Length: 267
Image (cartoon, rainbow, N blue to C red; front, side):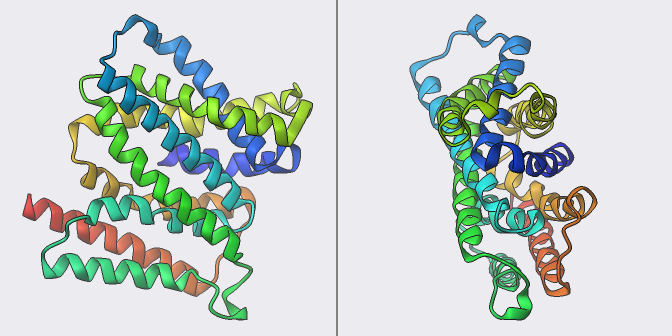
């Protein structure tokens, strides 16, 4: 989560140079090259079912990144991550049965509602950015589900294949929207840092973790992500949030932690 939040902040610094889609293409393509060289997935044989799961996992990853980077072009990083968090939180609370589970759902909904631009005092929050962040959240849910399926019986080499599949989706869009500027040598060092921090390292760690814990629990353990995103957005990008928005992020985190305890007790 620390790597991802820091990498997302650095990625936003790339937007004036290559745009949101260009930054996504750099992130995923450079990460794919690193992971392919390190884990050499061609040495492993995959079943037909695993190949299908890897393609779905990579597709969800690519769409998630494209939607998310497009979202943070319009809204603050902390708000985007909190809204995107609808995905893993939905996975975590899917099939809720206990009354306490519904309390956490209600608390999360209150948190999400406080991030929406109900009035002029809500700050400069773009409805379009909100919609993009929610789409990223839906893809994040798919990333968790298909990542768990793809990673079962596999390892970090699965992450290399997944990121490669995601890069094949993002790279053409990056080239179309950015053109030759995407390959400017001056851009590549920051793009490489973003690729390592946002994709190569966390996705490899995810692929090691996902087969060993329930998908619901994995989603909830990401509960610190919105707070870390808000913090790095403030430090790196000088993005400030209103008191109401901070309270909303806190409510989402509290719902996540509470749901973690509930899941652990019910399991």
